[in-house]
Length: 148
Image (cartoon, rainbow, N blue to C red; front, side):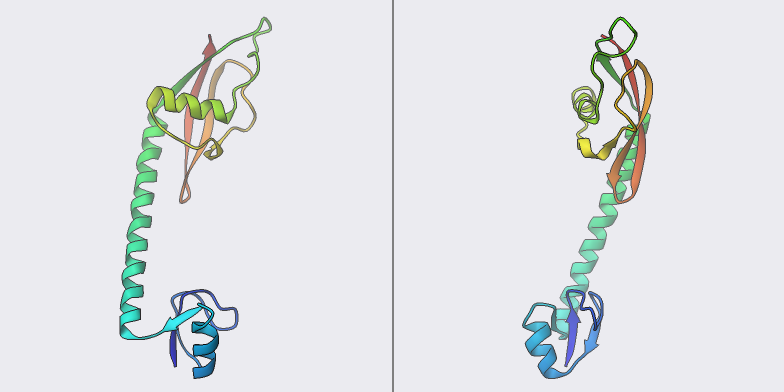
């Protein structure tokens, strides 16, 4: 019996592989537990179409991430914050505040978890913040912290 693996099976193979197995093992275990489907021409064709759609979606996501990277690297975000007598900020600027300022100033929504500050910003000046946009696309956002 030929089966198309739809999940990784430790001793048999990886997702998408077509394997020849004994009838009982294939029908009762692999198909029965949802690890595989019978490898009929229709099932194989459907699998290939599904994989093509997934690949196209992934390529589109990567293209969008690269477009966002170019846009973010061209921006200069200005954040106004209160400064104390010693020249340091009162409090600090975190990735949550950076994400909020990006949304307010440029209408660009980034998750605060995708912004990486090496340490909270505690002084006025110009800083770089790493932004992880997914699919291995990373860019640097320039932030100018000024006195409010």
